[in-house]
Structure formats: structure tokens, C-alpha cells
Length: 220
Image 1 (tube, rainbow, N blue to C red):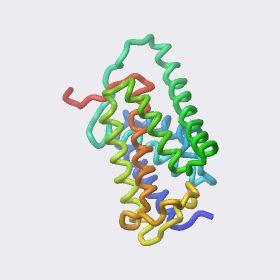
Image 2: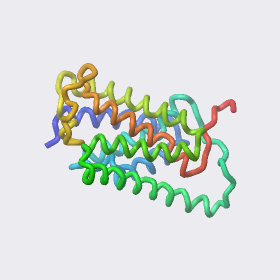
Image 3: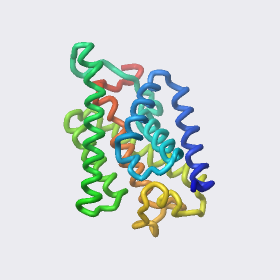
Image 4: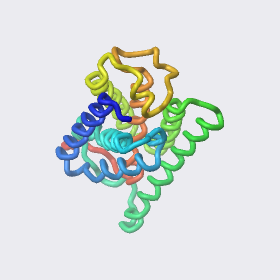
């Protein structure tokens, strides 16, 4: 059963998502594409149980995908490599699909074969995916780092509002892992902050990577 705290947390996240969605028309498709793909295929949805869990996943992924662009005023630049229009239109979705599948399987292998806790498997697999992205696109490193930091801050602030002096519910509802529940930053369990940073680190540059786009400043 969804707790009032989790409901407030999800609604607050949805408000942030809606604000970013309405603020920049340019990034709306990215928010939807990454949100849908992440919710359905990536480890963010491994612990989901109901509609609000999926809504949380969708909102989180959409925000993580565009937070760097919106807050730092970045825009999509020219393609990094010249490709035929038809090939570019069809190939990016396949690349995104394959990356998210690889992300999911690496998390599952860590969880079930090596008996790593779910949230730790998600963090490690996110680092694997992002390492692959950065190895091929070093220009996206700032995007990844900033996205990770921003998502950690955003989730921390929203958690403090929704779960002030009330711990454990998010951990039980999404990850079912209380291994670090005795470690907090104010009222927020550290695993939530670490998880948010790792997910932001992976999701931030993902769309630009598969589309082959650079991020540029308005004056660039």
C-alpha cells in the first residue's frame, strides 16, 4: 500500500518534471523517450510494484535526462558524426534499446549471481554503462557528472520535504534493501542519495550519446 509520504514524494517529483517539460520545448521528446525506456527496461524499474512506482521511475528518468541542459542553458548542437538521415533516425532507438538491455542484465547478474543487494547492483551497473558512454564520448563527461550531482541534490531536497523524520518507507517500497538504513544525511538515507547520483550519472548523457549530438551553450 502506498504511504502518504511516498505519494507526496512522487507528486513533488512530478511537479518538477512538469516544470522542466513546459520550460523547454526542445527537450520534451528526450524526457518522454528516456522516461519510457528507463521505466520499462532499465534497473530503475526492478523494484517497482505499482502505478506510483512506475510514475516515480518515469519522472526521475525524465528529469535526469535534461537537468544539465536546462539548468546550465545547454542546447543540442550538430551531430558529432555525419550519418545518413534515415540511418540516424532508425539507429539511435536501437542503440538506446541495446544499452538499456545491457544495463538491466548487468544489474540482474550482480543481484542474483553475485548476491549483491539491489540498490548496489543498480549503482554498479549504472557506472558500467556510463563508463562505456564516456569512453566513446569524453565530451559528455561534464553532462554525466553534473546530472549525477543535480539528481542527488533534487532527490535529497524532495525527500527531506516528503519524509521529514520518517525513514525506511522509500527503501522498502523501491529497493527492499535496508543494508545502509542506519546511515543518513539529515533525514535522508545515504543509499537513496548514492542511487540518485548514479542514476543521474548514467541517464544524463544517454540520449545525446545514442543520437550523436553535442551539447552547446547558446553563445557557442
